[in-house]
Every structure is written in structure tokens, then in C-alpha cells.
Length: 239
Image (cartoon, rainbow, N blue to C red; front, side):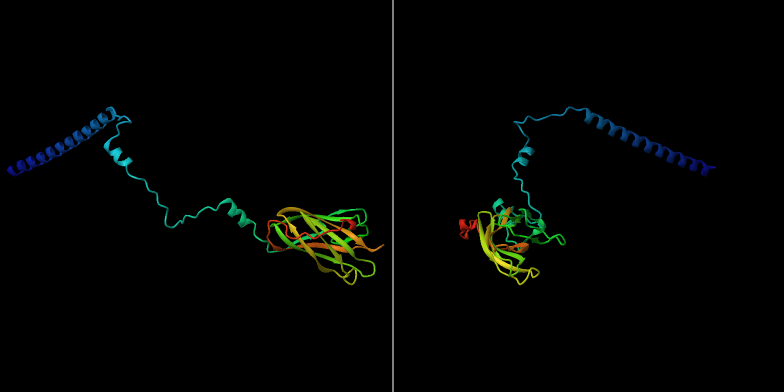
């Protein structure tokens, strides 16, 4: 009987300890909530701009240094003149002016009706061929023509004008009208950008044809700012 009473007292003590523990935890949570509400309702003190705090002064006095990442090197930007010089590089390929892209001026000359790649029936001194060439860089160019000419009823002298100057050259026979060759005609200064080239006869054999023309090719020689080569022309020859 005594043991049962002692056990009952131990159980009552444990229950009392648990109750006191739960009550204490509830009081602690209530106190935290009360402190948070008081801090939210408290007025905020703002310092005037003329009187910054000591912490702000120490922050303002520290220099701000921004370092570029080591993996991203900083590259200087080239000036416009350097960029323009980089763009205006000498062309590595010739400019080929096909007669298919030309404007035929005159009543007699025409494109061959089959392949449409050759100017034929060039029998009139007033007829000419004109192109608008996209010149990649200002400079001096070698001019070549791709053509055919028969010795018996072909040949003469032609001129090509472009930009500030021009050239004149003789048409040498190639053997027959079916034998096409390339002939060096001379040098021309050409400005960069769209440039008009006009080709026409100066002298022709009576009753003959100047040539059968397929193309004019421009080959870059050197880059210059001002024309260094302007061949003379004779006004008596009709240039």
C-alpha cells in the first residue's frame, strides 16, 4: 500500500513539471510577439543630409575600385580612321564585268541570241557598252578584255572611260571570230564604290566589226589616293 502511494506521488510530480514547462514556453512566445510589434510601431529617426553618421562618413571616404575579370581582357576600340583603313583592303580577286550585266548603247550591236554572253555586230562607232562596277578599293587597276576578232574583217581602236581618266588600246586579231582570248588593254585609276565604265570604238575598219566582246576584267595593282596614270587621248579620234 505504501509503495502504491509513493508511485502515485511520483506520477503527480512529473505531470506538474510538464505543465510548468508548457506554460513557460507560451509566455516566451508571447513576449517575442510583443517586442516585434513595439519595434514596428516605433518612429524612425532620419538624420539630415548635412549631418551624416560616422558610419556613412567612413563608407563615403573609401574609394570604389572596379577590377575587370581576369578571364575577359579589355580591348581598346579602334578609331574611325583605323576601322576605315581595315575595311579598305586591297581586293584579292579581280572584278569581272560580263556583257550580260552591261547596258548596250546603240542601234547595231546586240547580245548573241543563243548564249546571251557575247556582244556581236559591233559595226557602228557610235555604239558602246556601259557597266556599273562595284570597285572594292580605290587604286590603280589593270584592265583586260575577253574577246574574239578575225583578221579579215575585224579590229580597230577602242577606249574605256571610268572615274577621272581612261585608256585606249588596239584590237589585235585572235585568229577567228570563234577564238576568244584575253588582252591587256591598259591601266585605270578607279575610285572605291559604284563606278561607271563606258567602252566604245575610236577607229574601225570600213565595213568591219570592232570585236566580239564577252567581258572586261579589272585587276588590282596598288592602292593610291590620287590618279598617278592618265594616258593622253586625241580628240581627233573621237574620244
